[in-house]
Length: 208
Image 1 (cartoon, rainbow, N blue to C red):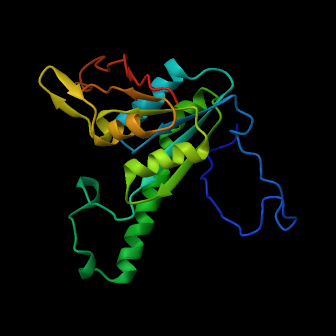
Image 2: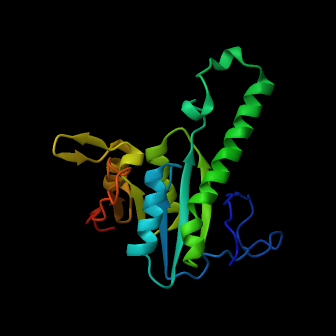
Image 3: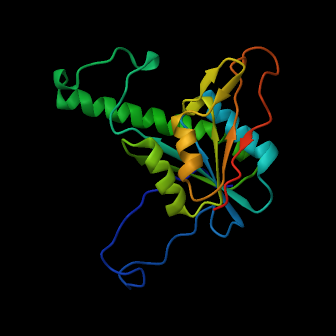
């Protein structure tokens, strides 16, 4: 099976039939009966969503698009040291941080695909840079012609309330605005203790 492919969109001024450009190269997802998107944000919740899709949702003939929206400005967290003022950094140091973050993103997105590799599910990785995660996810879902999108709940900002939880801003926005059905896979806060995954996801019943 071929390895993951990072999708790059290129716009030409010439029409698609122009002899200046060869026909599109076939990818592992070409000819799939269904193209299923899985939105990933490099969290444990996203990894679980991929595993859940393999075990419970995907069927023969499906192909998967791992869709990751990479922020245009880096937010530093525990794994990336202290937050810094961009104006206090040199252009060279900022470029190095951007390159390091790109490598980090590519490496971890590839790790998320391991469950697909083991299950022999054809897939490709689609990474886009944008400052608006919610809107760009919905735009890419439509542009890629996906039949459905799967995403983890807590990894995309779900807020837990007493006795129940509600969808966070990103997943809620996608449920309301995506042109295809959206499946939200719940990830329990008690994942460190035993079999704590909630294997019954909330599935959007919205018709496209």
